[in-house]
Amino acid sequence: MISFVILHYLVSADTQKCIDSILALPDTSDCSIVVVDNHSNNGSFEEIKKIYSDNTNVYMIANKHNEGFARGNNVGYSFSRDTLDADTIVIINNDCFIDQSDFIIRLRGICEQGYDLIGPDIINIKDNKHQSPTNPPADYKKDYSHYSKLLTIYRALPNFAAQVFYDYVEKPRSAKAKEASHRILRQTDVQLHGACLIFANQFVKNEEMAFNPNTFLYLEEDLLFQYCMRNDYSIVFDPDIKVKHNASSSTNARHSSFKKRRINNLQHLKHSASIVIDEISRYGRY
Image: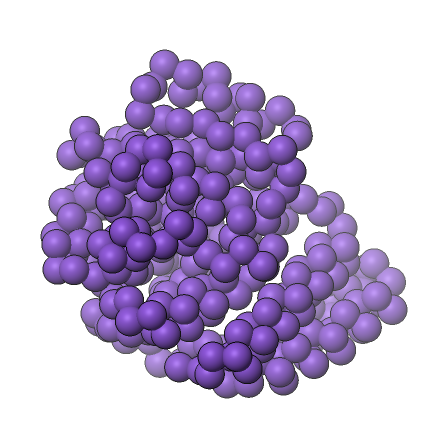
């Protein structure tokens, strides 16, 4: 059985579009959808519950607190694995949707090949760029220091200057650092993008959680990649299955001020980088 886990936060239109895109797929008779609300507290979850109240294949779970990405999704993963007895668990961002009609058929075929962690081709609808697989940072300690410096800058900037600094200084440098020749080919043992990750076979059989629970936001896929490599789980990026991504909708909705949003993001990045650094120092790096 395939279970789709959608972590909902604030933006009901995105979550509804994601759910509807899955329900519209053929061959979903053996599929379920688990929506986990990360304590939105704005009425959006109640709205979604009402829309799908008659659909017995859509399950709704409300977290009492905002657990962040990793722990929030772990709730849906555990429910899918332990309560629904799913053997394939698709954790997909609520700002993603699937419009590939044979997605389920193709996914089942990939799962039958024995892969434990599967990444689809994720296409950012804002610029049509392919987001997966990703290139992990060469030096997480350097990134940690960089986030600290950026936090100092943003805290000192007036509100009107924060967006300007990001657009003309931080963003161009970040884009250049991430620039890489992207080959849309099947690849194994690569780091996958976290907007849609598919857990199957031995991973679901052995693991009670999908993600390291010590992060709140960001670098979950970095920790997952290191964990899978250490534990001999097979990873595949397969562009035969595709997902569309409307990036950062819920993150943007949380803070009206760009400065507050950027400071919040950098704080989480810095914390997550410290977790990755600690894991690498203990276990080594792949």
